[in-house]
Length: 142
Image (cartoon, rainbow, N blue to C red):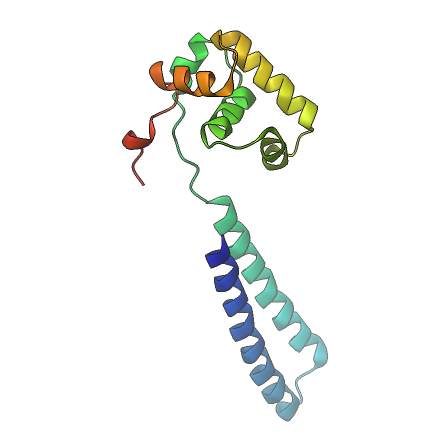
């Protein structure tokens, strides 16, 4: 994540240097301010679209076997919560990642426990691995 921030910051710095050079040349050639503002707006729009696309394309680990999860009748959201449980996140961290309340996360976790017949998160993750719903870490290819 820090690498992304450094890359983004570096690109912004280079873009500002380019814009300063363009601004200087624009002042010399007496280009209308509206055209110059439009060019800057288009550059920032393009950069924003590119950064947004990069953030959306982040690798989501395809570690959930949805067909086997259907046998337990786990919903899509419960599968997301199960994947985050597998990453070792706390209830609050899961809530923050999914943009839901802490109570909603606890509800999802309790439903996962009921459907899987377990009483702890470690048991839920272990059973999901045994049932091949979640691929175990040694089988995950990066």
